[in-house]
Structure formats: structure tokens, C-alpha cells
Length: 146
Image (cartoon, rainbow, N blue to C red; front, top):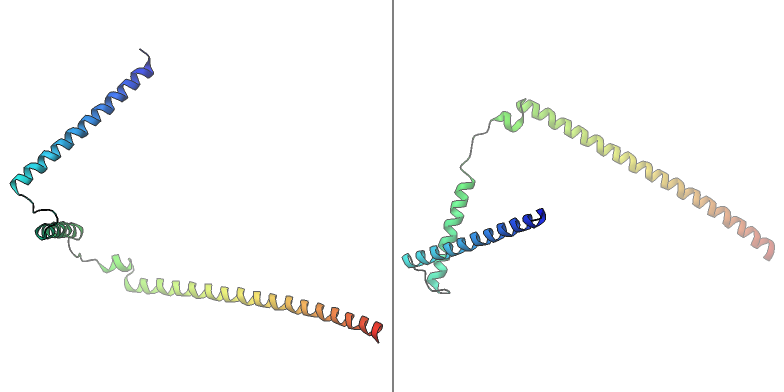
């Protein structure tokens, strides 16, 4: 027998085995549901009692989740919240952040001011060129039309 054929047979056997396990689990779940239904019957679907049961089940589930999620409030030390330096170190870091923020804003304003100046210079150059052109056209018009 060829190696690839043996591998295919193993894969196929494994797939059948997994399918069998899934089916057995499904049957077991259905049997458990039936036994539970026999012990504690549910209310008829769509009835008011069934809606109340569903609401109670959801409440229990959410309550369990909430309990598991937050065990309570722990005391956290000042050093953990503010850093090893305490309040003084925190204030120093805050001042440093503010200083850097101010420097960035000043640099940004300078860049914007420089751009505005460049734009104004270009605009003045364009206006001067346009003025020269208009003077030249007026001179030509005077020569031709008097």
C-alpha cells in the first residue's frame, strides 16, 4: 500500500471517529434535556409563565457573570496610581507634559505664521506682475487708440 493512501485512510478514519463522537455527544445532550424536562417540566412555549422563567434564567446568568467579573474594590497605593515619586513626581511630570504641549503649540503657530507670510509674499509678487502687465497693456492701448 502506498504511503499517501495510508495517510488518506487514517484521515478518513479520524474524520469518521470525530463524527461518531459528535453524534454521541448530541444524543447524550438530548437525553439529558429529556431527563431534565421530566424532572422539572417547563411551561408551555409562548406562555406568560415561560416568559417569566426565561427572564429568571437570564437574571441568574447575568448575576453570576457580574459576581465572577468584579470580586470587589481593592485598595491601591498612592505609589501605584501616581508613580514611585508620589504627588511631587506626578506634578513634575504634569508640568513637563504641559511644557511640551506649549512648545508644540508655539512651533505650530510659528509654522502657520511662516506659511501665511510666504503666501502674502507670493500674492504681492503676483499682484506686482499683474500691475506691470496692466500698465503695459494700457501703454499699448494709448499708442494704438490715442
